[in-house]
Image (cartoon, rainbow over all chains, first blue to last red; front, side, top):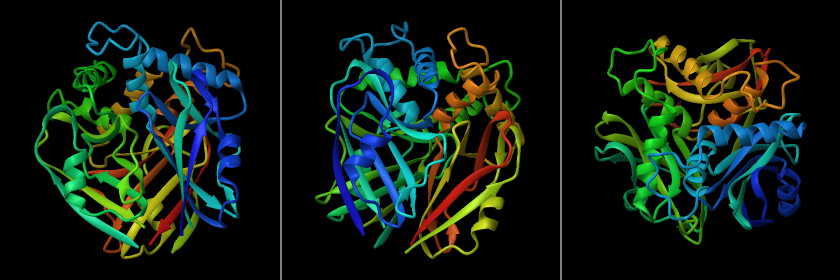
Length: 136
Length: 136
Length: 136
C-alpha cells in the first residue's frame, strides 16, 4: 500500500533545522512496518539525518558546508541570483534531496540521536515543499 | 507491483549531464502513484538532482566538484588508472549512486526546477548502465 | 511484501570497510525482484557504495574525507566529545546514512566493481546497528 502526503515547511533562515516533529505531525499515523521516503522539491535546499540533541552540531554543520561550498568562488559563472545561490546548489548536491527511513512498530526507526533536518541553503529560501511517500 | 528496467546511457564527457528525458523515454508509462528508484552500476559516476534550467549551474557544479576532489592530491595512493580516477571515486561517494523519486498522477513528481543528472567523473567513462525500479 | 532485519556490525577502526558479505550473510535469501534499503542508526558513521577491488581506493577515500572535514577547524563549537567527533558528523552528512539497491534474480544488482561500505568516522565507534528492509 502506498500513501502520499504533500507537506509545506515554514520559511527558515539559512542553516540546518530539525524538522522531525513537523514531518511526523503532518503525516499522521504510520503503518506497522514499511518505509518512508521524503523528497524535497527544490535545488537550493536539502534533507539530511544527523545529531538531534546538541544544537552546536547544527551550527558547525552549517559552518562546514559554508567551508565546503564558499560564496564568490572565482570559478563561479552562475552569479546573477546572489552570492548565496550557487553555493546552495552545491550543498544540495552534497546532502541530496531525498531520504528513505525504515518504519517499525508504527514508528520511524531512527537511532536515539538521529533527527531529520532541513538544509536551507538560501539566505531567504521561503517556504519549502516536501512529498512524503509511505510504503507498507 | 514492481517493474524493473535496464537503461544504457550514451557516453558523456566529464561533467554533469541532464538525463531526465532520456530516462523517462526509456521507462515508458509510469503508474498513478509510487516511487522510482534509479541506481547507477559504476563507482566513478553518480546520480544527482539539481537545477535543470540554466546550464551555467552544471558548469559550476563540475568546477565545485573538481575543487572538492582535486586531481593529484599528495596523499593519493591509488594512482595507476589516471589522474581522473581517484577523484572520480570521491565524487561518486559525495553524490551517491542512487535516487528515489515520488511518482504522482502518472508523472515523476519533480520540482519545477529539478532535473536528473548523470555525474560523469571520468574523462572517458564510456556508456553507463542504470537500473530503474518502480514500485506501485 | 516487506521483510525487515536488524543487523549488528562488529566494531571497526576509523575508515571505510567493505561489509557486502556481512550484510548478505545476515539477510539470508533475497526475493526474485525488489529493493533493499539499508539504514544505519548513527550520526557519526555512514553507508556508501564504492570500489570493492583495490584496497588503496578505501585508503584514499578515508584521506579525502579527512581532507574535506578536518579535525580542529577553528570554527567548530561542538568540541567536547573529542577531535574526531564533529568531523564525523560532517562526513555522515556527506555519505548519508541510507542506501537503496535493486534486487534482481534473487541477488543484489550491484555493478561488477561495486561493494557496500561502512564509513566509520569515529576513532572508536564500537559496534554499529543497521536495519535492512526488503520490498518484493
